[in-house]
Length: 329
Image (tube, rainbow, N blue to C red):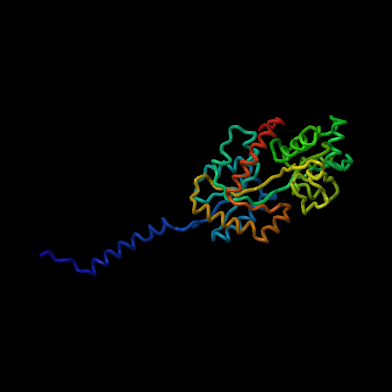
């Protein structure tokens, strides 16, 4: 008869095997996130978008229990940063603070983008809107959009408008305004808001479209005059300035907006965790108050809302680009 091995040594062996396997199994099943997360902001440090990214990073870090580190990757109208995220591993450790430039304007004017606005990303949620404003040099004596339309039609060679770049949100906004109101003026693109608004103050251009964030200090100083905001509603920062819609052009709306994105193929559980964390951060009263201080409009929406907005706006932006012959430079 075969002798059975003693039970204690056998149990000890089984226990040792389980102990050796346990660390490996635990490493494979570690809950997300178990290391710092990178948030790519495709703009230079110091601007309103960078401040927004850092605000979100702090809040998300607190909700997720891991630090969220902002990395500024400016360049090529957000394409540099967006492409980096699109090509990153879909594990939730690389995120993108995308702008409408990333998701609806670049695809409207570029046929060879290195990313697709829908197929290359997993949308996490909408964050905020940034309004645009039509501003004029005070010497032009313009008081309304209709004044600009009337004077530019009477003197078609008199008016030019500045923007912070060809193919930018303000370029699109101005061209939409020209088409809607019958305004005749020539586009003069600059390399950023600062040179565009400096040219406006100096009278090199008569009007400009820019973000309310960049324009507000000069408006408060009396160096430029606000004519109308391009948003659907009046802005708390400029309550006396009418919308374009209120100025006689119902339904007009154009602005910049921001959304949190991850690479395509993100696991559903990770996506849900990020969506929940963003919802809590973006709707927190303290976060929204800070956004308003930055002249941003809180505009939270879930991942599905991001995709719906892209699908709704992209055809319209393509139509504007075709009509105004806006092309990537």
